Image 1 (cartoon, rainbow, N blue to C red):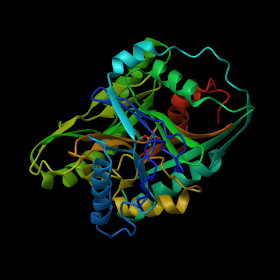
Image 2: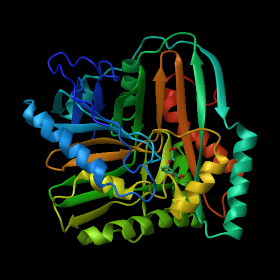
Image 3: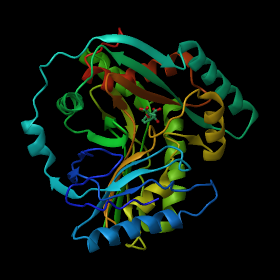
Image 4: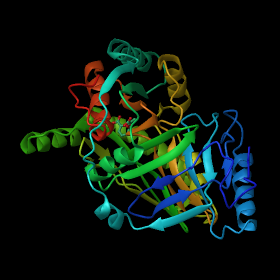
Length: 397
Ligand SMILES: C=C(O[C@H]1C=CC=C(C(=O)O)[C@@H]1O)C(=O)O
């Protein structure tokens, strides 16, 4: 559904409140203010539906925005993991692009004390998560399923309301090279995070994607850190986990491209919390009209967040994950009316609602996975958001 605001000047009547949007990238970073029109329609209401209606609604919103005097409208926001769930997209009244490095140089690490943790709960808790990993491994032996990404949510209650600005500043200082985002999603809830994973960037007829799969926790000691990174690079379990992602992305992109460059083997990338296996994929589109959002919806969900084969993995996730992922492991980003834009995978993130924060993390499970290691991997991935909240890994679950 599309809800154009009647009072464009004031930004008035949106469920998204003041709707401050932020997205940063080395390509283009942008800020959005106000809400001209919301697009809450699911990308694909039934799994087998075409996405035509959804993309038509986006086009209608662009047309309405231009008519209302927004010269270069941009659709921004979040698409959930499950494309049958409502999208959290909108066209801001004002949008300005800015240089990330300039912004980073003005952001200071926040000195203000972070409110104390009152309660913390993992859903599922450790024992149930490990059982789910075992269940997935058993499935690999008796079905076509080859990989499933299993995740959990860490519910944190703080003594007082936390400032989203402050958490975001800490995320930016912690890793100036991440894709940072801040997105109003519902009521007073805001989605914030620092993702390392580019789902797709599309500029004219050029596309770039940078899938990640295969992970190891960074180490404080530089020798150990190097050793850990090298064993990730040579791990057959992680190479397999990565290859399943790349092969599926090749299948999806090949029909749209007259040129597609996919490295033969992955390389290492790092965040302050994690090492990952990474493949930088570049393609040239046959049809330059295909938008960044259309491409992103075709690629999503990759086996980096769902599994392989997609349908089987989705079924297992539904069966064993005791919470709704919502926007976690979906995509966040932007797309302009010319179809250019960038969408990143919604990971290393949290949803802030006053003093309540939900943090999320998942791990790709394959036949050689070990439940304890996969649990530890989710702990390490939570480190990105925990650090920004001043919570140590020892304190966390
Ligand atoms: C699902 C997450 O990470 C994905 C992205 C990079 C590496 C991953 C892995 O090694 O399992 C995951 O596929 C997460 O951070 O919550």
